[in-house]
Length: 240
Image (cartoon, helix red, strand yellow):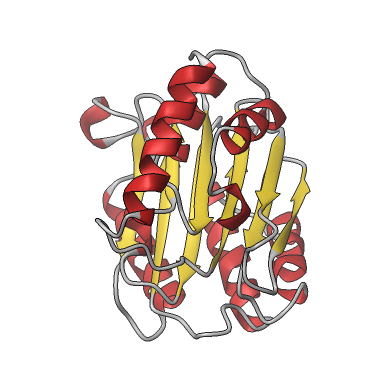
């Protein structure tokens, strides 16, 4: 994608919010973008004190990558970032191109993972404290307005130490982050998005797991309950 188009999309999105035409509360949250090298699954899991966080933060495309856009989330980062990844840009290049073109970059936080498991993250200087993240093999964890760095540290360790499916490891990462303190404001919603080509409903799309808890007192536990139920009904295509 031409950089001029990247700039057009991102600048227009920022100005639309800045002019007061669209409510834009900050998505203080914590999330993980990750890959399962054995299955090729790519995914995002997120929790926030923000209603329906799954409608704003997670983006993923089978065979391409996954992106979490949060803080003052820019919904163009998902589709534009995935297109840049599909063109062969590295995760570092994707973040550099998008944030350079975005006048609101100081308020953005983004985690990106590519097809090969290389992950990068960006935290703008005006994201609310505590804000930051960690990258590791096949994952990146990030958050803002957290109780402290112990949240993302716990998330990273949980993902690395947990066995099971990609969905299970990402949910456990969220659970560990919540136990370590989580979002300073509390909790409200959570979401899980996992993709792999041909693994969606009927083999007709790539959305293998696309689950959301939009408003709940314990959203991570509710997300886990829904995931367990979904897994019983919709098994992996290669394990029918």
